[in-house]
Image (tube, rainbow, N blue to C red; front, side):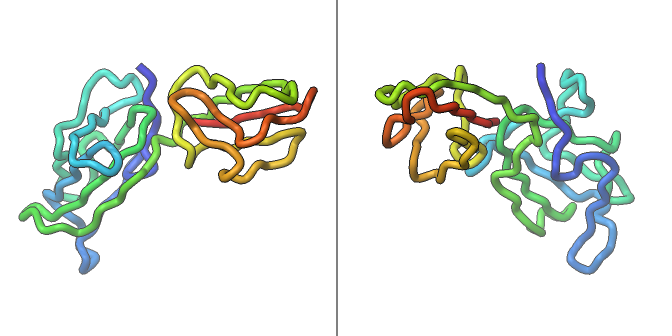
Length: 162
């Protein structure tokens, strides 16, 4: 399983309440981005031992074991006090994974190219002949990138995505 260090509470982070006091016993709930569907986080880079959900912070306001590792997905984190009082919600936090690169050559007629797996338009960057393409010039349909106009014949297409 591939896991990546979290941008939210990665290594040794310390959490505080709104008065700057370490969040002893604080709670971190983890969900799939934009939902209330629980999503697993892991204790190490091996991705074999899941954190409880919620993660209960230690007396210093730190994650037990000191690390949060994520699946290659987007998460929502909800931070609460030990009494379940909401401190903050952080949505659409990505796992910090290394982007994949797909290269194609335009033929002047093809508008759809397969990226091999599903992706998120917000984490996609497209270049044709080295020129960045605005997001309104393409869309994603499943694991395919679909251009509003076919890239020119012999053009170099590079797609970076996570």
